[in-house]
Length: 252
Ligand SMILES: Nc1ncnc2c1ncn2[C@@H]1O[C@H](COP(=O)(O)OP(=O)(O)O)[C@@H](O)[C@H]1O
Ligand SMILES: [Mg+2]
Image 1 (cartoon, protein in one colour):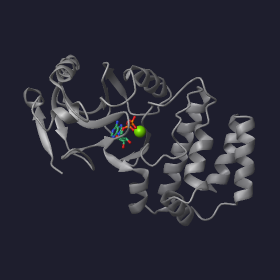
Image 2 (cartoon, rainbow, N blue to C red):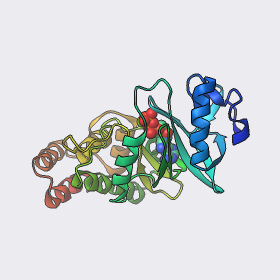
Image 3 (spheres, helix red, strand yellow):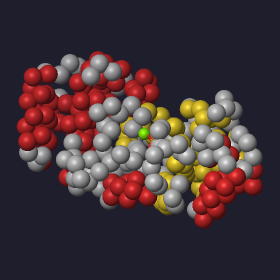
Image 4 (cartoon, helix red, strand yellow):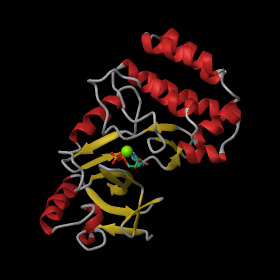
């Protein structure tokens, strides 16, 4: 896997073009995208990160988008690029829901969108799973988990359902200042019942993932009957007091 720091004038060359237009560039698709990148003020694209796309490094890759670092006005930002083979119309729906999440202090800061690109704050760090490999201090882990639960509660309050938090390994990131972020509002919706708190609890406490194991080891085993009861109560009535009771079961 190679890293490359590429100015706009060279993006139409391979192998860069076929990452911008993943999985395969055509001149006409590339032309459309270059114009959008110019409109967004992108100056440089950095191909680097822990994931790969073709032979290049990228920050992240999902079924809808590829995330790379873009330099805009000298600042390093996250650029989500819609995959050509995704079945989505555009990234505009995601932009709208990310902006809504931002109103309650959740998600990377949204900056700009075009049909195929979304520019947002870059979360430098790694996944929560990675973070838990090196942070096993009880107070620190508690603080991160509490922050995540509070963010989910705020999303529940505005009826914004993330949709992919029960299997969250790629959607919970922690930056280098130990602040957790929920990313990817692509499958989010305001039309479903918001179940962010319950979904994230499933992910953190109820599976047998690596994350569950570490949390249980650091915070101690939960009383699973009481946790299930608190989850059920919260699901019925998502008020603050039920949330506080649930938090107690999660963090005590
Ligand atoms: N703002 C961001 N900063 C850093 N990494 C990000 C950011 N947004 C997404 N990522 C990483 O890129 C991956 C792919 O982005 P994501 O939005 O999940 O795409 P998809 O909609 O295709 O699943 C994510 O799982 C995450 O690891
Ligand atoms: Mg994703």
